[in-house]
Length: 315
Image 1: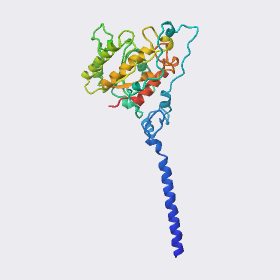
Image 2 (image 1 turned 180 degrees about the horizontal axis):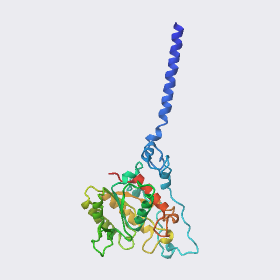
Image 3 (image 1 turned 60 degrees about the vertical axis):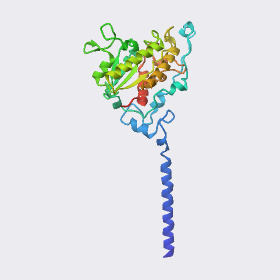
Image 4 (image 1 turned 180 degrees about the vertical axis):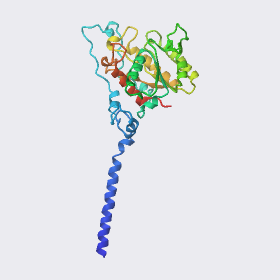
């Protein structure tokens, strides 16, 4: 009898030890889920949960790694005059300063399309391209980008966006009348507004004038929609051969520096869209440009949308 009890106790002890080892193994497998979502750790459980129901992304969020990668730089053509050499233009930054990076909205768990409901995008012809891209996507995926709407006008800038309404203005027509963006946003019932303006300001207005106009635009939006959340997107870059004497990437970087600082002061999120469009030398990657200047190919808009999914503003 005593021998049977001894055997029973040994068996029970072995079972307990086995369960303990198994539980330790299972717990050790969950460490990735506790890590924050960063470019180095894009596949944690939170990110996977956030991506469920979004068929555009793989389960391990490879798109996340992709959107934070820089494309290969274009070499200058020795048989072609480069504006940088012709006008002695300064080189753009290949790596933004830490102080600038600190102003960028932090990475979030990937949002879903419904997070872009009640959202309006304000921008120029580059944003007009985004609107066309989204419209085409919605032909096969009706929920693409939620019900986000667009106020995109060719040649729009911070200055023209705050100009008085009238036929002489270039505001978008709304119900048959040229209407300021804040009034259209209000009519749309916008809760979030993303702005991308500046390419049409850099060559015409000083940094201070540009920021002053941006400030008026933000104030106008908040007067029209007191609880609106605003995201300010960086001015997008231009290609190596698209640079001009008064419009070049180093100057755009300078304006974006001031824009990021203003966004913080105005309690707006700052999104550095430019970063995912640049090549390793700081120019708009030629493979992403539709005109070797500033306008974008569908692949560029894929990167833009991917970036927003990880930096978007939540209500």
